[in-house]
Image (tube, rainbow, N blue to C red; front, side, top):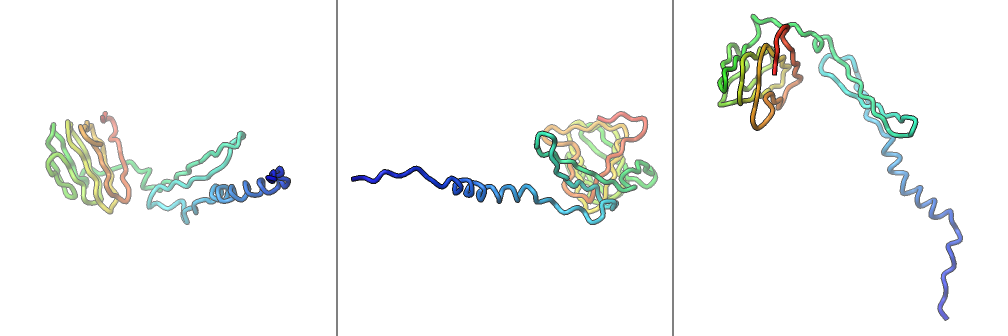
Length: 168
């Protein structure tokens, strides 16, 4: 005679198993990134996610960003800046820290760079360990196969729009 299985009598075991399977997922949701040790530091803008939940229980992330006084300073000195003047597909550099290679103008040192003129198909590449201030002074930039301004590496890059100019 074949034995017929009796219905599972202990209903607590499936609930306990389900809870044990969900615990790692719930624990992972409560782990937060450590906050920056000095949120007012001027080295770089920092974003620290702060998870919370709205009234429906949906997770909401608030990104807080801090800026140093240097980040908020839009002044620049034309006498000490390097000027990069564009004319169609050509570029001319007046100053130090940048060089033209083919259709790319490579900024290899920290400093202030004033971009002027029209670049119809080319690229400004930032590749330095320093801070770069790009002053857009009536410039029109276009690149057919990538971004016209490409930051490969930099401590930080500040974009400044010169007063009274239109930049595209």
